Amino acid sequence: MTQTATGRAINFSAGPATLPEPVLEQARKDILDIAGSGIGICEHSHRGPVFDNVINEAVADCREVGSIPDDYEILFLQGGATLQFAMLAMNFLKEGSIADYLDTGVWTSKAIKEAKKIGNVNVAFDGSATKYDHCPSDEELNLSQDAAYLHYCSNNTIYGTRYENVPTTDAPVICDMSSDIFSRAIDWSKHAMVYAGAQKNLGPSGTVLVVIHESLLAQCEGTVPLMLDYKAQASKGSMLNTPPTFGIYLMGQVFKWILHAGGLSAIEERNETKATIIYSALADRGDFYSLIAREDCRSRMNISFRCQTSELDSLFLEKATELRMSGLKGHRSVGGLRASVYNAFPVEGCEKFAAFLTEFADNNS
Ligand SMILES: Cc1ncc(COP(=O)(O)O)c(C=O)c1O
Image (cartoon, rainbow, N blue to C red; front, side, top):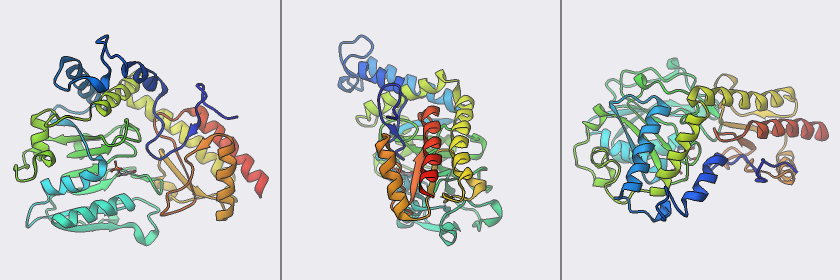
């Protein structure tokens, strides 16, 4: 039976996804009693010294992990990445202006739909023509003059595509990094705002990390409901109301785990190794498996592929389940199979999966 060291299944889920085992072990203790207080993390007031310490450390560790400059605020908000689709447009897509959006699949399409309810949107790239098999080069962009901002998604969870370079524009760049935040270094000189739902690389679902430059905060005019106002949230340290205390705590633990692992450069190197193990196994049996993403923009987090028939895809899932490998079904919009191997996913899991890929192809061709 294929298992991790602690007897847990090998979890390839696209999100909520595998979390680092040392983080879960620590949480197991802290949920009963954190910092010797005799009270569990979910039971502490968010206005007391114990939680103050938790959130202050989470912000400081997040800044260190991401090498985030001091002129960016770090916010922990609610409503997941999906609420950001609306919230960012409500704050930054003003009347009479236009925003550029790059459509690289389901999640950006949803962001576009939300933004269109607020204001004018220019879809500067539409990937639907090539079934979202790649992220665009600068030459493929049809940008507008003086856009309020450009929105893109660095890693497309469903198709397994990622940008190698940040799109070039004069407008402030806002990025949905939900599925690859802190899997590689972030060039802050090219981003005005980055956001990420927590449930892939950071922690439990619902919580969202927002890193936002002060020049964007200055644009918030206090005209939107308070909870949706970045400036109001920043002015209260993400605590306008009762914040998602457990989510913030767990993210904080994940930041500590990344720092302990050697920071982003070590994490990135490990992610390269992991993805190479799986892509190589798929390439070796290129007669049997096909990849959804174009080769020059393959994600290191989500590897989407298929066998030659949907019957073989189903059999693949059945055999994988017998080996306690779970979460491998592709997203319903593309079908096929998908292995999500976020930061916390172990190298050994990739090695076992590569061996399974080879064995399955040998047994079924
Ligand atoms: C890239 C991307 N953006 C946004 C979302 C939506 O996140 P949430 O469910 O937290 O709203 C997802 C969810 O998988 C995603 O992969």
